[in-house]
Each structure stands twice: as structure tokens, then as C-alpha cells.
Amino acid sequence: MRNSYIFFLLVLYTSLINASGFWSVVPIVIVDSLKNPIKCGYRYESPGEEIVLKLEKYVVNHHVITSFSVKNPNIKKTDLIRLQTKSFDTKKNFKNHKHKKNEYIATANLEKSNEGGKLFYELAIFGGMLKINDIEYKLPLKLPREISALYLNCAGDLIRPENEIH
Image (cartoon, rainbow, N blue to C red; front, side, top):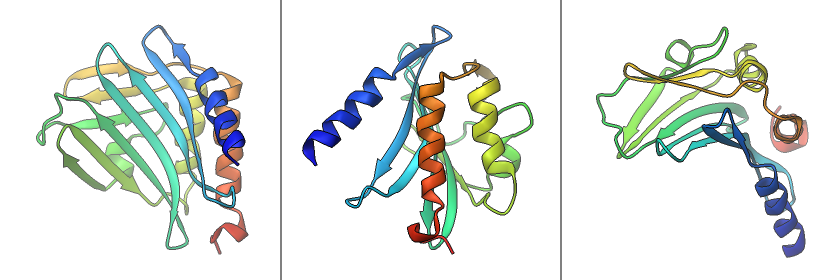
């Protein structure tokens, strides 16, 4: 078990890329003790700007929840934060949001629409734009296959019937 965990971490770190010279992107794949996925997504990090952006899917009470979070030492409670892709805007689709110290978190239940899948698809293919107040941060285009494939495999298994989705 420990060897498979170390191998998994090695795969994640070797798949770390520096996209567009600005963002490092890794897939988020968290499994339980039975190796069933419990959380899937993408983690973007911009060391120069000290920004960590996470988009995740996970199951709560038989529903797939999508979360969007941004960490930065300069984030304040009054900051306006959103993520936009070709056709998706978290300002429109994510109604539950809160600020913590240096962090913004928003969640949405997008499972009854195409929006959740569209968000992750468009990020992987077309990139997107993170906006913090009036500052725009362009996310990378065309994530490498090893990043998107790990996310897609995890997300597919996340919604399997034996994984508490009915």
C-alpha cells in the first residue's frame, strides 16, 4: 500500500508542468482506503504571484459538488474573485461562497446540468481567466494529456453507482 502511494505521488510530481511560463498545473486525485476516488480536480499554482487555484469535484450526500478556491496572502474579504472560461463564469454558476483569511472558496451543485463537465473540459482545452478585482491572470491553454487523463479517469470513477451516487 505504501509503495503504491509513493508511486502515485511520484506520478503527480512528474506530471507537474509549467504552463505558459507562469502556472504549474497538477491533477488532484484523492482516493479512500479502498482506492475509490473521493476528490478530483486541477491545482494551478503561480509561485511568482503566490496564487493557488483549485477546482475540485467531490461527493456530499449523494451529490457531486464542484468547488473553486483561490489562496493568496493578499486576498481580502471585499475582493471580487471569479474564474471564466469560453462559456462558463463562476460568478454566474457558483452561488455559495465565503472568504477565509487569505482564501476565497465557492461551491456549486452542477450535476443536473452540463456546466460542471463544461468547466473542466474548457479549462483543459481552452484555458481560462482568473480575475481578482481588476487583475486578470490567464490560465494555460491545452493541458497535457497526462494531466487531463488523470482527472477524467478520477471523475468518471467518482460518479460510479458503487461510489454512493444513486
